[in-house]
Image 1: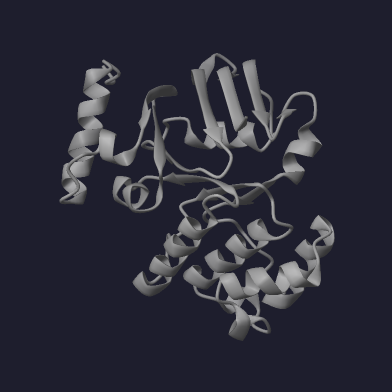
Image 2: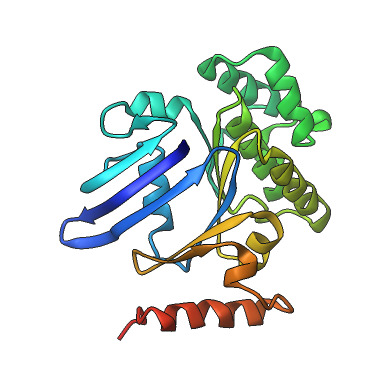
Length: 242
């Protein structure tokens, strides 16, 4: 049984179509990349999956719950790490994560586990406002992991991190495969190729392609080459802008 099912999902804002008849499924335990340039519909699809708002038409189900019918049940089962989220700058890392622990009804053991996973042991008494962007991103990831949600949505999780920490976070994401379903939203085809078992590519609000990174991006010698492959996919579907 797929843990995420999107069937002919359409989302309109006034008279603008943000998503156009999107259909895809994600199996439990998969690590799937969500790729596409700015304006491709990635954020809109993520908000549908988080039950932030319903689709205009079609259906979106997460962990067996329809986002229209049971949005709170969906939100309980999704951990979301948003890139660039504004945190409470005057709280310490410990106070913030303790607050999230209470809201999510997580245990102290779960809190200790995510602090260790995200490398925050030595930073718990630091105020969030004094942290570097990379460490703030670790805090965002830790709050998403709290309470062991079966679905984890990560938006550009390694942005602003130093190379060593980026490698560790990629390793953590890979280690989650099987135990949790991870949807990784990124602009980087290279990062998706390193981490994801499968990718879903959006372009101008439509599903452009889906498959394994090896099938869709067979040549991985450089970032430029991967971008060329993406443009080739767009051209093959006749979805270029006028």
